[in-house]
Amino acid sequence: MDKKEKEKEKENKNEKIKVDEKEKENIKKQGKENEKIKEDGKPKKKEKKEKEEKEVKTFKIITLGNSGVGKTSIINRYIKNQFDTNIASTLGMNFDYKEIHFNNKDKIILKLLDTAGQEKYKSLAKSYFKNADAVLFVFSVDDKESFNTINEWMESFNSINSKINVPRYLVGNKNDLERKIEQNSIDEFARNNKIQFVSTSAKTKNNIDELFEEIGKKLYIDFLTKGDKGQNSINIKIIKKDQQSKCCLGRADT
Ligand code: GDP
Ligand code: MG
Image (cartoon, rainbow, N blue to C red):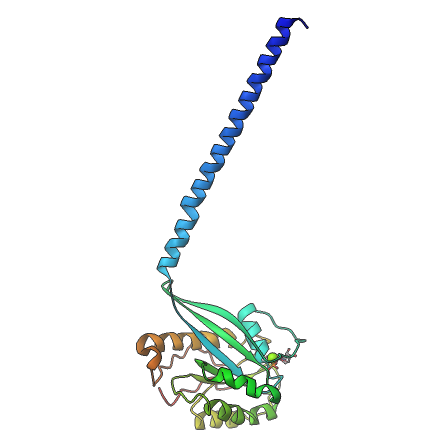
């Protein structure tokens, strides 16, 4: 290779480096453009959505009842759409959240408090009774004792939180199993205590979503119409009756 050829090769090399750098710059530029598009696109949409949807309130819902009636299962079914036959018993207090959206305009958050039914946790649970916005008294339809104990759970709750505007539901869970409690006794108890009865199964999902949707709607409408000071409640009946029982009784305060 003579001197001239060497110089030409060097020139070519430099040219190539220049071209490579230009290409890199172009790629970088394109990347930035793409990022710009992303920036211009996504966050704007998000911003718009946030503006559109207003978070109204977080409502605390407490589940009370004997151990083994299915409180944790009801919550798991609603939040995660899961059912497990072998769940560890709840220790103390757990909580989970779920949003409910209303016409893409408002959203509320349900904070579901899962309590342990054991006697030793009753005193711990009481500290949560005071701030509850709604309460579910849960028994299992195949366990008479769990139904007979509801009275105690109600007395315990009412002695701390007697606000009439806190919706109370009597939940007869495990309706997929053979019933050991007369439906008449349940209806009578619900009537006497002015509480709405809902028959559910965390296993088959019967009335689970409907139960929480009803609670959410009720809390939302009560809040919009009366704020936190509402004393009476509006009853929205959206729960379907199951085949075997009268699912829903109207509340006497409606
Ligand atoms: P908790 O102590 O009240 O929280 O009750 P769990 O949710 O831990 O449930 C106790 C047991 O009952 C578990 O083995 C669950 O799988 C079972 N279980 C819960 N709900 C139902 C239901 O609707 N039907 C049936 N067949 N079993 C259920
Ligand atoms: Mg539990």
